Length: 140
Image (tube, rainbow, N blue to C red; front, side, top):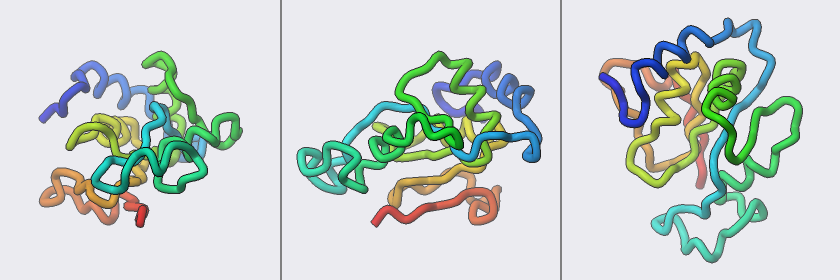
């Protein structure tokens, strides 16, 4: 099964680039755009920047420059893959769709996904012991 927006070449490439845990020099990874919380959580105009803890993407992006993290707004695909494969944890906040290509990228990169979304239930729970493979960080 190949998730949307991830090619077979990307899956194979991430697997080849993935470093062993003891060689990963970055604590956490997030590349993405700032977005207010989904309207189902709260009116977006009430939570526009990193001063609102529910604006998870802005809170993460405010950490840009922290030497323990690989955080940025928009970088070339290869740089994002380097961050994924060099990090211990990869942050997976809510996106615009019901599924998350970022979630799947973390697995192929060997990074531990940290789900920052109370309403997202990862797929394949019948096959993968998700509580042992995923950190679900409560957002409320």
